[in-house]
Structures are given as structure tokens and as C-alpha cells.
Length: 101
Image (tube, rainbow, N blue to C red):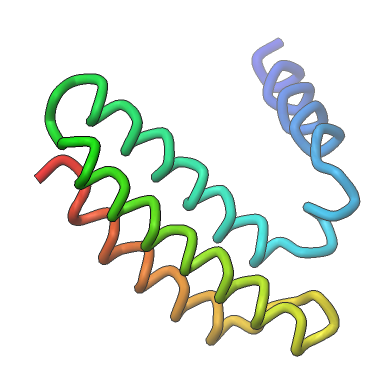
């Protein structure tokens, strides 16, 4: 019975993916991280952990990463390479460490 539940969950999540998500897994991963960081920044402001000014700076850094991701994809048929993904993730790690200091 438990096995059926696991397969049903896996099937449901794969059906939830859009064609774009399936065709661009590296971009999807990078963008999901940016979305998560955006949520974390908002939560930190709400909890009083960071100021609105600090949040604005972090959002600006995330927007620059997102633009760089788009620029990289534009040069490679809307895809990013593993190396580009690694670079973007390193930049996101830097922003992530600044959230909630």
C-alpha cells in the first residue's frame, strides 16, 4: 500500500511539471532558488530580522542574478550549461548567506 502512495506522489509531481520545466531543468533549478530566496527575504523583513533597505539590496542582487540567467540562456538556445548553472548557484549562495544574518 505504501509503495502505491509513493508512485502516485511521484507521478503527480511529474505531471505538475510544465513542458518548459522539463525542457529546462537547470534554469528551473536556478529560478526555484531565486523564488525561495525572495520568500525568505520577505519573511525576514516581516519578522524584523532585516530592514526594508537590506531587503531591497538583496532583491537587487537576486534580480541581477535572474538577468544574468536570462542573458546566458539567450546565448544558448534558451538553455544554460552546467557551468553556468554552477556560477549562478554560487552567486545565489552569496545572497543566501546574507539573508537572516
